[in-house]
Amino acid sequence: MGANTNVRFSLPAVCVVWQTAMIILFGVFIRYDEESDPHWLEHKKLNNISSDIENDFYFRYPSFQDVHVMIFVGFGFLMTFLKRYSFGGVGFNFLIAAFGLQWALLMQGWFHSLDYTDGKIKIGIENLINADFCVAGCLIAYGALLGKVSPVQLMVLTLFGITLFAVEEYIILNLIHARDAGGSMVIHTFGAYYGLSISWMLYRPNLDQSSRLQGSVYHSDVFATIGTLFLWMFWPSFNSAITDHGDGQHRAVINTYLALASTVLTTVAMSSLFQKHGKLDMVHVQNSTLAGGVAVGTAAEFMLMPYGSLIVGFCCGVISTLGYIYISPFLEKYMKVQDTCGVHNLHAMPGVIGGIVGAITAAAASESVYGHEGLVKTFDFEGAFEKMEPTTQGGHQAGGLCVALIFGIGGGMIVGAILRLPIWGDPADDNCFDDETYWEVPEDEEIFDSSIY
Image 1 (cartoon, rainbow, N blue to C red):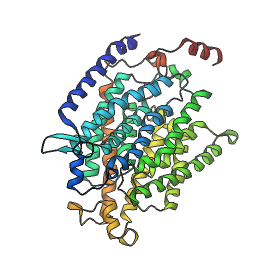
Image 2 (image 1 turned 45 degrees about the horizontal axis):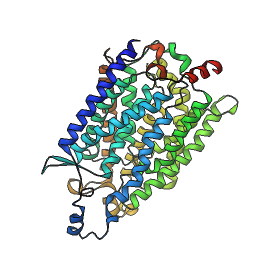
Image 3 (image 1 turned 180 degrees about the vertical axis):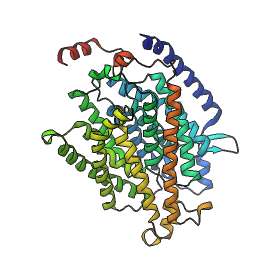
Image 4 (image 1 turned 120 degrees about the vertical axis):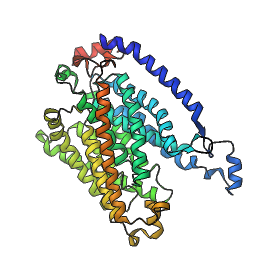
């Protein structure tokens, strides 16, 4: 009852206050960039651009659509596997993504898109894609906490998560000069360990009081698999959305496509091999089949080679599936990490693998493989990094992975300590994984559950 009362009074206040703050901050800082401003016509004449088709919108928008579907449909439905928490999975995913993308446009804008001539952040289609990427890190963290936290806690998690993400992204991509097109390090490693650290800080020793609701039912697993399929189909767009025009983006799509395909076969084989009577576990099919897309993210635009992508997918299918079978129970029993969605197996371990693969692939790069211009373009060896060698770049890639781990674990512990304060209306142990705590649940649904399950 205490949680319900808190949410009724706190959630509306938090949403209204933060949305009002977003309106004010957008009014002060956010403006259209030159390609979305009416002065585009003058920009075309000044730069001898002959057609509107050269506006970046027409190049990036298809990828933006795909990534946007992944964020709101893919991640949302992937979290509907719990028998009594589908509203929370989709609905709170919707809430924190909508808030997060607004805050991300500001935070990333201050670091990457600030026009120092007038102090304004200039945004276009690429900023929208990057905001979705930023939100993805918080949605991954939500997966580790699914069903155990209040919507107000999720808003606080997102506020700090977006802030931490923007800082670590700037350090990794701009200061360290690591390349991470698909976000294996910046998005997946950070987001997963951020969520896992918060889960560790919010450990519930009596969570078994809600054990009756922690499982799935037939129809909830079907809905969750819809999320899997959307994510699986659009992951090539996710990894290639902000890569360089031309061969880099083309290569990123091919590498991701092949890694994902390899992961599916490997996951099915491992699931059948380790389950009783050779049957498949739907949890593995819903999650581990996506691990290859995570792990190939950093090296997606590199010369990983098609067979290399298949190897990455194969390794991740094995590691992720075994993670669900052996590592998740170990983490909960001995490390006190209650990982509802298994983000350690889908995002954390594959993210670290992706960072390692990226470092090795970058260090092994050569002019004979890339060509001089290809090497410069792929690794952005320009300006202050003009004389950078591939072996040095490999070290920078490894450094980027370390930064992602530090920000994820350290930031998660700090935010977890904040979320432990008894002011956020978190659910009681016996009310976890239950939509009735925060949602109006139709009566026929209650009758349906009690009569059949």
